[in-house]
Amino acid sequence: MLSKKTKYGLKALTYIARKGDNEPVQIGEIAKNEHISQKFLESILLTLRKSGFLGSKKGKHGGYYLIKKPSEILMTDVMRVLEGPIALVSCVSLNFYEKCDDCPDEASCSVHKLMIQVRDSTLNVFRHNTLEDISK
Amino acid sequence: MLSKKTKYGLKALTYIARKGDNEPVQIGEIAKNEHISQKFLESILLTLRKSGFLGSKKGKHGGYYLIKKPSEILMTDVMRVLEGPIALVSCVSLNFYEKCDDCPDEASCSVHKLMIQVRDSTLNVFRHNTLEDISK
DNA sequence: TGTAATTCCTATTAAATCGATAGGAATAAT
DNA sequence: ATTATTCCTATCGATTTAATAGGAATTACA
Image (cartoon, rainbow over the protein chains, first blue to last red):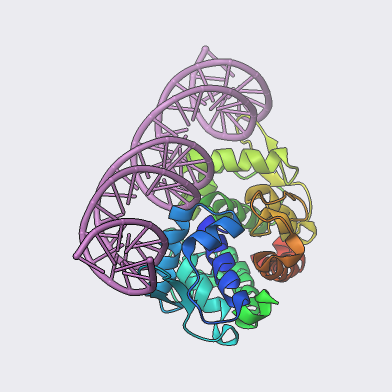
């Protein structure tokens, strides 16, 4: 299942994208409207800023704003930052590959075979969806 | 990520399917060959038996065997038993639907929109893979 | 210049989940 | 009888997740 971190992060990005203008949006406003714990959201937005999706302005009238256009923000990238690997097992992960300690031979592993298909189909969805798409 | 329970369960089903004959296969044999904790595997096979994938024979020379042909065992069914919902959020789950406590309106939720696509593409993979397919 | 409002940062905690283990009961083969 | 197996329930330890706490730094503006 999707972590709440990812879910809230996506909702926050959507919220900011839907506002359209480039004025900073405050954590409190997002938290209130999306029914998210403000402190938890704070840490999520921090992550999104540090990974280059959001910019921030400090102090009074501060907040977060998108650095790129929503149409340029791919779900693959957002998901990898918030949720981590897209693959369901690390031995089929493109960006977070790790060998399984059990499995001596990936080629003959049935789980491997199945999970490659799942990875590819999921990747296909994330590659074809930008923040603009899901914000419509 | 996929739980080890699911991973081991799939490996065990594959192991049994690959043996071909209908002789009961013992937990110990599977655990040893697939490098799985025997006790943990025991509980997984129990689950698979209770949900109708495996039959068992008790006592000496006992073990587990497939109840249906590998070509009749769909990954959708196995995954739902071992891993639970295929959907990444319960509000898009076909078999385990639950409303999100935050989200007041699913139709306008960006996460919902994205996760429906992921669900459908994943489902598509699981529906087109049987135990026979992944055991090849 | 001071005050209020905000982000920034680190640390901690509470709860849930996961993977594994323990130990013995029941059953079947020989 | 003895041995080998599944069956069942309970529990534990580690990890992860979601949330909270508290204060530092920064900015707007009266």
